[in-house]
Amino acid sequence: MSDSSLDRFRGCLLGLAIADALAAPVEGLKQGHIKDLFGKIDTYVNPEISRQNHPYRYLPSGVYTYNTQQALCLAESLVRCYGFNPEDFVRTMLQLWNAIPEFNTGAFRNADPVFKAVLSKLATGLAPFQAGETNAGIGAGARVAPVGLYFADDQDFLLKSAIEQALITNKDPRAIALSASISYMVAQFAKGDWQNLKTNQQIDDLIQFTAQAEKTIEQEYIIHLPPRVYDFFNLFFRSIEPFRRWQGMPEELVFNQIVNLANQAFPPHKITSPNQNFALASGISAIFIAITAKNLATGIIDAINLGKETSSIGAITGAILGAKFGETQIPETWRKGLKNYDQIALRSEAIIQKSSANLKIIPLVNLETDLTRLAIQEREKFVQKMIAQGEYDPQASLKKRLAKAQQPLTPKLKRSAKKSKLRRKKTPWRTWQD
Image (cartoon, rainbow, N blue to C red; front, side, top):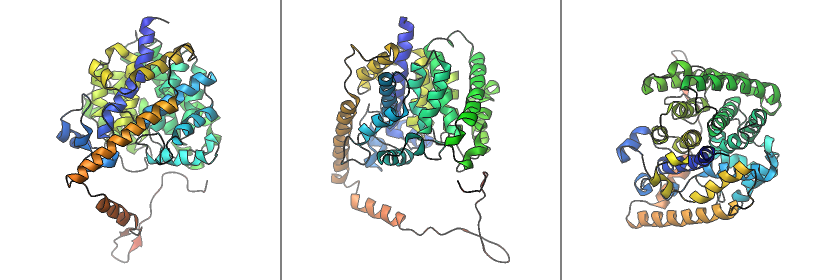
């Protein structure tokens, strides 16, 4: 393999992890809130500033989240099994899930509710394709990059593996199609096939692949999907298709278009910004930024500063841009600040040579357990500091959460001149039981 290809393969996983770590301190914050606190995120920021109101979400600077951890699990499983094996991938994730019994997500850091629910079910012995949630989030897309690297020269296995790894957590064709498209972009950039193509040619190729992916998901994997998502086929393709005319448009107009299309694609709730956890909102935003970015740093900075789903958006954009521009284009301060930098880079090399032989790779469960324990210790120090300064009261916080949890779930009433009627929730999908 040429030095330029090695640079892009290493850049992919490192870009994913670095963007994830850069974004972790502001995960969940709105764009305006980030601007008020930091102006613009363009380096590792002090998490004590952004986590004063939520100290238990604190992660030390340079520490990546469960997005990167899942990608590392996937990379390790691919190399060990000479391809994608869903059972082995699940076993690898469960090793981390069970690594720290006193912590409710084990060695995983800052995991979201969907991931927690799926891993809890998998831990009981449920089969890989039976545990997924009917969810169109972007988590599966945030971890899929190793599939694009491993199967860069085999499009059939790439598509199959990208779909199946997504099915483990997301039983929704919109999330699955996002995962497939990201893996394809990573593959095309990493092996250099897109390097000499203009952006509009890259977009045309992506649109063509996405159409094939949507068709494969519907024809070959519908058996794994609940009937209520059958109306969602082909919606991801419809969101990718406008990329041709969006190219060159002002960013604000593009994001308005993304929001408008997302609201026409049966979102679980109203989409008001391009950064929300929906494959056709934040997922589309991330890959559009990545395919049109002129350099790595600017693309990652633009993605992270969208706000809300910063870690996942960052992971997707960082993986694609790392494969596009390579490790050498990652700013030196970003590289030096990332925890476990060398170990992540070695896993990229293991994917290249399809083996971890002769590489000084630390077992993943040991690597991540040590980093998570360190993160927990640093978080506890921060919490105690906040308590000592009188800026945080854990008892008051607990009472507030309990009071909110105990509030009765009463349906809203729609006012009428004649009588009050229960407001019916209109669903865009079929109403039969799964």
